[in-house]
Length: 348
Image (tube, rainbow, N blue to C red; front, top):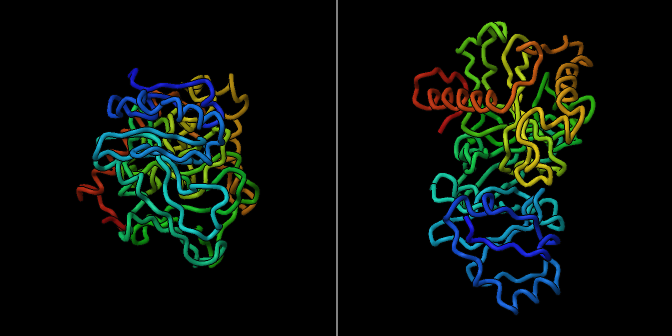
């Protein structure tokens, strides 16, 4: 809102946007930060070497570069991911990095999350827990759905170009990320997925709700709403990223409705130019059809039938995608209020 300054030489530090960084008018003016000394410091050193001034939040955000902002007292940076730096030890706990100031207490939790890995990756013993200080939290229940400014928080389960079938364990205590298991063996895709894959927290596809004729009356698949993120950056497992919804596919998997939300990282270089599903073809040709065909065929090596799609196999636009988010969020609220039967799902 005009209280944010951007200089040309910042491009090597991060591509920053006022709406993403400040979440409205919650951030203090940054003008006073840009003293001649600080200007010279930024020009002369790399982003990793800059020492933040008192009160200045300066963090590496996976898939976004370096973000910084001064927030009003009581507010925290939110958004970001579990990978704080590429040179951190592989097994180290990694703190969430931040992107936006937000006044809502529910969103402040994102900035203080630590991801903790336990067990050997590729085994049933592996899990990624989410912690706030010493307190375990759930990535499904405790991370807010909305990231502000029309964006939504995506929890990445499977980074692009990987094959391990990781997922938020909706039935496990505090819902850690674990590798899916079938017939006593951990699951892998037969080929890599070409996009970042995850879910929206505080959403639920209710298995008790029957879909309309456009989806053949299929019931929900009992999981959070899936997200296919099409941006250029690889998002690490466990990261929480603000994404812009673009469209949605109504996949029918084994008779169950399994919506696939198509979205883009809010800080992707193309994000400002891609605002609806039709824009995807202009900037990333073949992406929508590629997503549809990948999910149509991915189970066939296991002698499973191809998956089907409702709505004449069309990818619905942003307006419909927002309706699906709203609908699945309402289903989630019904679950938490006891209006809907939760079955074996774990809830706080």
